[in-house]
Image (cartoon, rainbow, N blue to C red; front, top):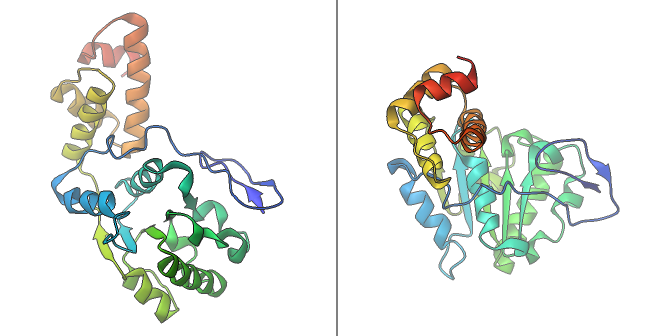
Length: 241
């Protein structure tokens, strides 16, 4: 088996599980801006570990919609009794090795399911994992680029099990939502970011939310070093815009 760093990098040899996958420190539920479309999903995720919680929660949406953040946040809530598996990093390994004994955990979060859809070995292994997880009381959260019926899954029984619980779509973030996320995350850092300044950042660097948050990180460090507020002239200076 291999050790995989969720932040990136090539796998390194390792004898056996568990996988050492680091979660992003900032990927918590409290750090997720709950837009109206996501409010029902957040309630279901928070309640999943309760006796009446959903056995499987399926998230789908475009890149940058917050799926990976939410899956890692689900693992942060319970620590060592959970595991986040980025299938994009693991799809080259034997699925039975990657997924073995996971039903003993309280929660398993599987990201980027679309990369193994159509792979017969992975589909069979996932089917058996979901059966074992349900029998053992392990909760599963899955994220993919599309819903269960549009993912290209070839095993009908797997497709039905992916929809055992709730299926929730996350929308693509528009510029207004990106600016709101920037203001929210700035406030979480103790920074004051005016909406007009957030709009300016998005207009100049309207990329993925992750890229925008990297800009916020840079602005935070500069603001602290120079003891200056996040004004538009200061942002222009730091970003060389």
